[in-house]
Image (cartoon, rainbow, N blue to C red):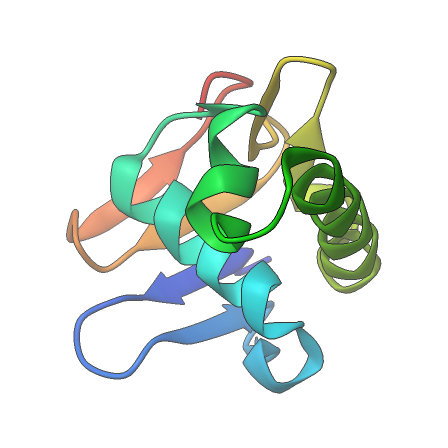
Length: 110
């Protein structure tokens, strides 16, 4: 199984098990995945809405995040993990990011 491969160098590309999926993701979902991949660790759930929807009221930004997580989760399956506090890649997912140059066996913190 190839897992999730995220190419951030050049035009962002995301593949799941060898199939391109970026066209199936909402734009903000793609941005969120790129952000998480670039940082390499799970992020506080409170920071992402302000990054992606900073011009909107916080309540609306949080609602947009929930919708983006739902839509992105439908494409990624269990590769993305969220809880009440953080969003990151699942410890069960094999995630490779070209910034690091090597596969990243993530845990729940990444």
